[in-house]
Length: 147
Image 1 (cartoon, rainbow, N blue to C red):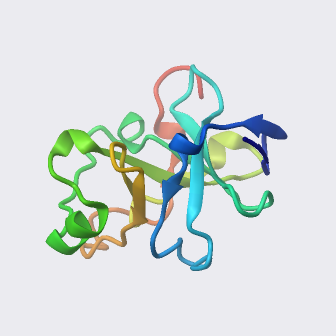
Image 2: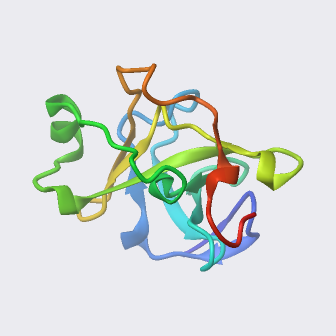
């Protein structure tokens, strides 16, 4: 099926690529269906695009490319919501707050997006230890092509 996107124009997606966010995302509780669309093979970035409203899309990043020691525990409740059975089921992204100069953009490490890639279920989790990871972590920490 084809969908219109916020950043990439019209793209073709497979129904099997749609990720269900049972609770939506903060600020968008009624939007439940999203898809991850790659931006550039050289950068650890993608677009988390609503399949329901073209204007709703978020640039997301693989946080471990920016903070190698990023780690957190997923609560039993979140594991149950996402039907996580093993660590290999999970991929984590952080929402990027884009600035005029990309190098000044930031990652939200406080509220990662956790996706069960096998079950196609996602949830944005607000970490309880808010002192450990900031809401605005500088994206300029990426080594290599983004600098």
